[in-house]
Image (cartoon, rainbow, N blue to C red; front, top):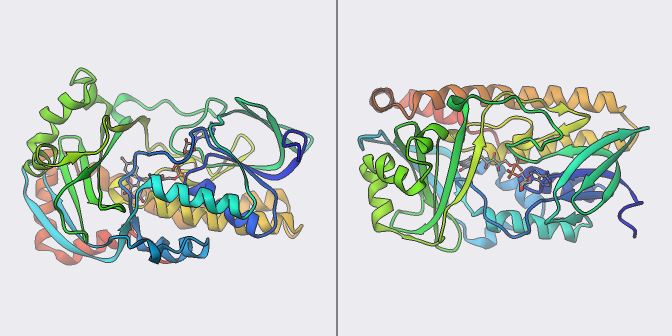
Length: 374
Ligand SMILES: Cc1cc2nc3c(=O)[nH]c(=O)nc-3n(C[C@H](O)[C@H](O)[C@H](O)COP(=O)(O)OP(=O)(O)OC[C@H]3O[C@@H](n4cnc5c(N)ncnc54)[C@H](O)[C@@H]3O)c2cc1C
């Protein structure tokens, strides 16, 4: 098949969890799908790698057989203030740990198996709509499709305008894989000045240590990650212990900059958005991956109705946007405000002390950050 002249039903830009899971569902429903990913699989990605158990059944329904992977099931959270004060709580629903290196690769293999055409190492540079046909230009060629879905993550590609965040609203994410000593069922969340760091077990007997902080913190430390860690993260005694007593498996951390949590839209530039491209949730709530997966399920159903000629394109966009807002708008807003509570030395300490004396409030906050199984 000549990929350039073929008219695909749906082109998907970005092969993270949202894009790959959408591609699998659409292919399973009989549609011709092409997916573009700018990196080459398998690859590491900045992410805390704790997935809420709400997504377990869904991932299995895509054909992943998660139970065969002996993944750590996480049922307890420990949260510390910048001075090291800790509170502990059970997680009602809880989550599991798996590296993005493994998970995205498993999904990519599944997508190929069900017939998705995958172009990895291929960056989409532009999308144009002429006479109801989309022209997708990548760094290698031009392709055509009837629909385009955008699952390109937190940072808009140049052909989609993005509101410029102020330095205050800009964050960086840093991730390491380490060997350390922490029970497999615990996720730890350690706060430091203007940031927080999660530590929890993933596959391969490895732990993920991943933090989010402001771009300003890095700038104030000569844009030197090591220096920033020593000057700021080490103030939290738990983090100092991880950094000085664990073995680090990467030569350099995986880093993403220019992250912002500005409001986005589920439909923009003629493209239907999902995952972080439609709206990124503050990772403090540990749930962006489940939101991305759930959005793919919602969108796959609407896209299928469109291709079955049961709804028009306008109805597809309207129905999907409404369902997206109903499911995710509040979760994203709550996470945004929760994030503001953390990372300030005294506010974090007082909030944790209050939550320690009101376990029902703590339970309520945790349940707000996890969705229902789907
Ligand atoms: C520091 C940090 C920690 C986090 N921790 C957690 C956690 O523990 N649990 C959780 O549930 N969520 C967490 N999240 C959020 C989670 O990582 C995201 O919500 C999730 O990855 C969103 O999936 P996605 O498919 O929308 O985007 P992504 O997984 O980011 O995938 C987007 C893909 O698009 C590709 N792409 C981008 N532009 C183009 C282009 N022009 N052409 C082709 N390809 C392109 C990218 O290479 C990328 O692979 C965290 C986020 C951060 C920043």
